[in-house]
Length: 133
Image 1 (cartoon, rainbow, N blue to C red):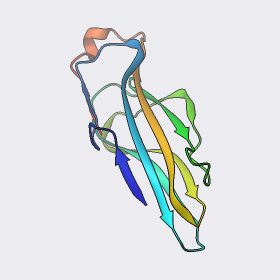
Image 2: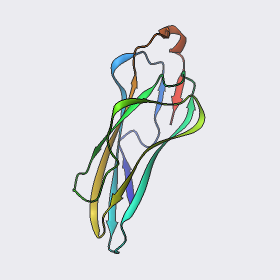
Image 3: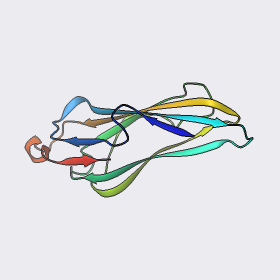
C-alpha cells in the first residue's frame, strides 16, 4: 500500500486564521492498494494532532471519501463538522477502510477539509493560536 499526499506534503499547519464559512485548508491524500494475495488490505485513517492551542473544537473538519476504482470500501465520508480537541499529541480517528484482493493499484482518495466556524468566542482571543498536524 502506498500513500500519496498533495503538493504540500504530509504536514498541515494553520496559524493566524479567522473564522469564516469556507474551508481554511484542504488536505488531499490518496491510498494505492496493490496485492496479489488472497488477503484483503485493511487500513485505518488517524489524524495526529501535534499541537492545538485553539479552544476545544474551535477548528473542525470534514472527510470526503472517494472510491476511485470501486475496489473494497473507503472510510465513510464525514459530512457533518466534527471538532478537533485541544492539546498536544492527540489522535482523531477518521475511519476504517479496505482494499479487496487482488488489487492492481486500486485508488481510494480522501479530502480532509478544515474549518474555523464563527462562534460566540471573540475572534481576537483565537487569532494567534496554532494547529499542527
